[in-house]
Image: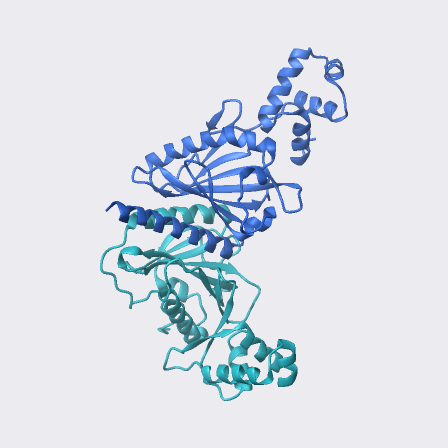
Length: 249
Length: 237
């Protein structure tokens, strides 16, 4: 009870003028028609008025309640997430807001992570997929609306926080430094190459073998390995491995 | 002032292209963006290009993926749909509407496949007239004979069906195929000629032609072969 779970709404966004709410209405009606025809559930987060709309039409998601479109409080979603997840969830939400805010115009990316929604006896594993939806052009492209798709997934572990650039097709893994009670954790983007090094190490390959497989020199391998370890504030590659595994990867 | 207006229009279009891309990616569906007035293709997503088997740089036209027969029908229907949509949006700028066409589409392997093509207007000018459409394509799960439907979520009579016979959208158009029409299709499917069908069903040639015309209208087709193939698809025969 009374656990502060996370913040979908970002208090640090400031606007010099009110966005055009005609655009909001149009986008909302588009989303609803899309949700009805495709049968998906999502939330639309308005960072200007700090409101959240739940658009729920996915028949597979039972924890979200009845079908329809509702104005909801932030706690409606966060209360569905298990109390034991409150520290990582807060870290995930604040990292999502940080990445969404850092966008440039026409940037196309998606952030996703897994969590479990629980209501009474029901429990569902879902993947939350965030996209920067509409910018407010008057305010130098400040983020205004965020769209978050809620999709059932068979992955049970919390986490797997991934950044996907849709234009370049590059995937980066977002790994936090050790999460603790006091601070929202600091996150780092880990590239596929760096991630492979961790996975190969976990599979028992030696540095020389990994370098051969990745077709890079041993010194390049060591450099990127050490750089990654230092970025994650880890003590060794095994420590980095534990961080990554704990976060669902 | 004029320049800034132009820039805004460009910004709006970029934003639409961006969200077509984003939605295609997160919902894993082939999307395309069209100009509402001219029906020209503005942007196609990678998933769509892959579906119809074209390269990213290739210029895409409707001829490349629409079945020739469907193209004729859609040409006729699409104008009615647009008129109907303009009518709906004139009454309510924020109407929640989507249109479904069941069409045959040429896929990457060269075969035609029935798909559900959903679309909706996404951007409006100051008079509330739609400017762009977003289309996406999905596999057909439940099939009906109502191939061209406008769904309006707020309305109680929330479906409008295209009726070939009336050449407009109507609120209710339950398609019933008469037993005699099924009999005619069955006989045609067995390779009987018109005169043989007349003899077997015991009707005049003019009446047969009248029935055939009705069959074509109901299935939105123009030949008996197409009608039989559509009937087989819908498991009527």
